[in-house]
Amino acid sequence: MERRDFLAGAAAAAYLVKEVGFPAEASAQTAPPQQLVTSIWSRHVQWVRTEADTRADPFGTGVAIGEAILAGGYAAVDLTVRDGGHVLPSQVATHLPLMLNGIRSTGAICDHIGVNFGPPADPLNTGWIASQFVHEILSVAGANGIRKYRYNNAGNTVPSFPANTFGQQMTTFLDGVRVNHRRLAAINAQYGGLCGVAHTHGGNIGNTVEPYAYSMQGIDPRLIGINLAIGHVASGAPGTAWQIAMRRWMPYIKCVAPEDVAATVNATTGALSIGRVAPGPGIINWTTFYSLLRLGGYSGAAENQLEYGIPNATTGANVSLNNAAFANQNPIANGQVTPAMMIAEFKRNSDAIRARAVAGGWTAAQVI
Amino acid sequence: MKNHTALGQTTTGSVRQTLRRGALALGLALGLLSGAAQAALHFGFSVDFVGGPIAGQTAIGSIEVADADCPAFVCNGSFTPSGPNNGILGPTGTLLGFEIVVDGITFTAASDDVYPDFPIFTFDNNVLTGIDFFSFGPPTLSIFANAFGGPLTGGGSYTNTDFDTSLIGNIQQLDVPLPEPATALLVGLGLVAGLSASRRRRSLR
Image: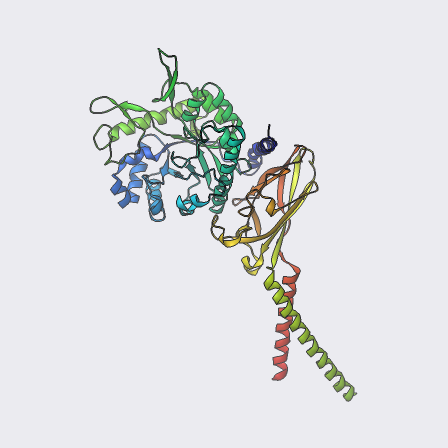
């Protein structure tokens, strides 16, 4: 083992030992009740308006978002603030407050946003802070009641290990990411203690959780954490590996994204394939998942992202919900997916969160 | 008696004039000196080690920030080594110095693995609300804490060259900033000069 690896590992381990102590300290003050907040990633709610109407009427769009997610059984929504999202980064100062007001006027919760920040692996690169509108977005978000935001959502900005790198090369890569995570954490502190949660995107360094945690060592997990997209993580680490990752890095897990995945075996080759499916049988033991969250002290959102396919409304052929379509875009515009179908899928997923969480030991009152 | 008094007054007046000239010369000299080197405000803080080979020890750290960034000696916002144009946090104050001795090892601002972008110290009306220092070493020292409207909480660790790790528990601010001696002297001289000028104007009426 390299000396640097050892030191880094020791520092991370020491940090986590300390970090595990935080909940006890917090509870000595005023421990907030442990809650699970049913939520949905707003790219699946962009169909409530056309893109032009969304830009022209952010308050009215916010009202429509709030009404749609409440009708679908969710309490909260995580609002996209990115190119092609509900709010464009260049319009954040004017549109985000209005859209939040619209959402909240319906009684829906919105204290999460989702952005396309991607802290790079080059430690000398600070250009991303300006080019990705980090200050512009977080200053407005922090001043308007946003407490968390998910980042590393877009494949083109999320760091992934270069091909054919091994051992120390990969450690050095993560050390570079850590430097930019420190920069992002400092900005989060500047705007009132926002928490950025790095999405465990399928192909990025966070897919197996451990490298993400390494790239966050020494950083306050109240400022930088992980958005555990369990469907992505369990696809790469089915069986018990995802459970160990959850337990080991629980102090950093500040948001979770439940999503069903199921396995099939190719009859000819015997190869295993894991794909996203609607709530139902699959490879994730949901009782274990929600039980681990509860026992690990997790309190926060359970945020659905809908990436499976359903029969379309016109021919019955499969149509994927893995999109960010406005009302003027397919599959909404061509009628293959209707608003009623989307609300029904929302309900199906929010019901699944509630039932599975209760099976995992949460009380009904804890799941809002 | 009158002559003596008159003589005494004359003598006293001459001494005062000499003192005034001396104070003026000293003030100018100090002014020039302070122009060359920024005046600093000093903060102290402590970290307690709660586990590992140096458990039970307390390390005292010091922070120096530019007093020009703290109007009326009250510091607010973030302070980094590279000053107001580092381009990362936006406008910041200047961190002039940082030092902490742990287990006989001295760590300074330049020990941070991303110096001069870091370390960062944050104040809210002279209350320390944030520390971000990480030296990858070896030896390694990380100190991180934030307040977010409540008490300063955080942690960190120190790993020595034998790979023994000690954990940091409580982190506390020890004092509010005091101007450094040169700054205090300049302020004092300003007061003396002001008083002197006031008396002079009064005596000319």
